[in-house]
Length: 253
Image 1 (spheres, rainbow, N blue to C red):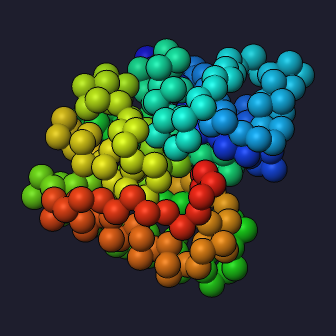
Image 2 (cartoon, rainbow, N blue to C red; image 1 turned 60 degrees about the vertical axis):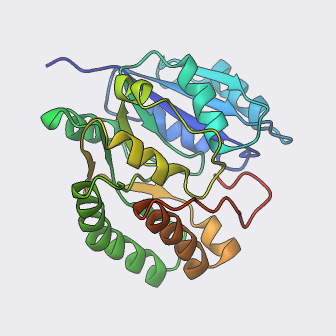
């Protein structure tokens, strides 16, 4: 079976506390054909230094790791910079505070290759959140998101895409115009899901789980963050302008 090359894009702004852990987890993937592209989004800490040290000293595998730099602030600026350097036929989106399980890439590629899907995505498991928050969030994502995304696509209006847990066909992403750099954070992933759904199905897979930090919820409140996401989604469904206000001045990824 042909295994397509995967380019894992990791946007990073001031991620010195997380980036080494994320890269180490990627080195343990059971998928053989992938590269990692870290886009330093004008960090003011040691993010770039730590990535360079990781590249120089890693001993686990010879997986290609590339560090690129994007001075314009915003997740999509960083992702687009990384995409321009990518050589894989599959783009995998991951955040710097994620800890992918060893089968994450393999599962993502397997689901993506079924029925020529444009993209696949799945839920977050907030590993450092409280047990109540973690279980409630994961259960609600598995119940609500697949149905909502499928119905939205039937209407041709939108699709749910989880930013740090997505696999996209590189050729379709190119046709869709790449990453929308006019959106900085809230709404960027939903906008991407909507644009990709014009060229194929965006499928939400419950078993494609990504371990992620709950730091954003801890900083801004669980219900407030969810309200922002839902507002952006339904604004897109009804073709309204996305609110670009953010609750943080720093890069939230």
